[in-house]
Length: 160
Image (cartoon, rainbow, N blue to C red; front, side, top):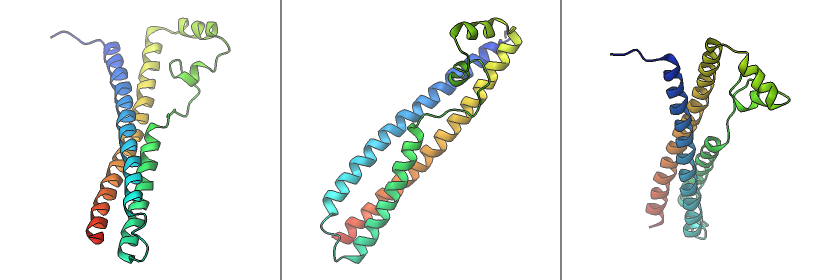
């Protein structure tokens, strides 16, 4: 078995993390679209029936609260995330700390292979933090959406 270059591992990790972040954004976008469509349908269906029915009002209020939480979590996933650092060579905000692209080019050229590898690994670490936050928020969005749907079924049962 041949040895695997640690640069290859870093590059594969970078690609995997970026793909995971994009996938979380796509999933949250689809979920958000479904949530908003559901809220519109729910309000249209139960809007006039809520008055005078305390049980339906209570379940609809809970659906509304869970809907807001679910939408908020989904939006937090698709909101661009950055790391709290101005240092480095590869994160877009740290690149723009230089006045010109030539200054950035010089900074890259002055680094040896080991220093560049360390920069890539640091970027991967920061991307992993971003991916972790996004998937945590996506998980909460899914849980709140499930609760929202379950309470909507309860609302239908009460209404019938």
